[in-house]
Length: 112
Length: 112
Image 1 (cartoon, chains in turn red, purple):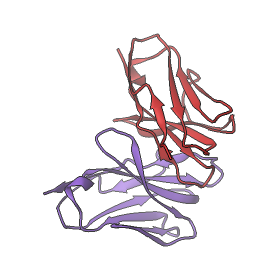
Image 2 (cartoon, helix red, strand yellow):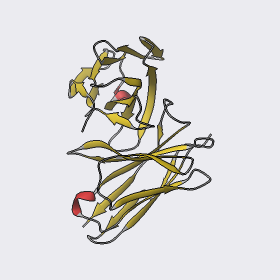
Image 3 (cartoon, one colour):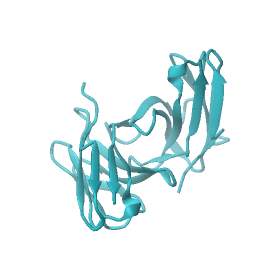
Image 4 (cartoon, chains in turn brown, blue):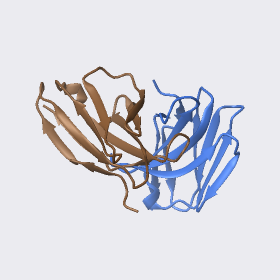
């Protein structure tokens, strides 16, 4: 089976712009989660989708949003980018709650 | 906020030695998962241990879980230089719908 894929792998944006990141889960996985990783805060949970429904959301401002499509692919959007949004954004897929979560390679976002 | 703490933060050993990393967490969990990350890349899933399990093995990896102490340990036997990476524990807490909470990680360096 193909693993979790994320596009793009690298992205450079300027403050105030918006960005959309994409994640394709492992075939058959209906749960997709997003995480932000920074040196200072570590790995932090953004949100989780299951069958197109957001089931859980982390403590991030409303500028961070996401969605999941009927084929389980997911996108996350960050509007009005700030310098502090520079991070590695990781997507994970799983069969559902209490199952192993498999991560993609991540999207490295740099905001200048 | 981080659910758990990992100990030690950094560990340096020689090839062939065993490496032990510990993880503590705060709330009830469904399962605990261990991951490896090389140089800011994606997370590689190593092993999942459920709350009703006490020990699991996978190749050179041995994971234990003590729910009464809210702690887990990861043992890598006969370490290799290729094991050099950051290792994270992540808890799948009860009633958290697919959300994983990560520790800060242990940086393992295996010297040839």
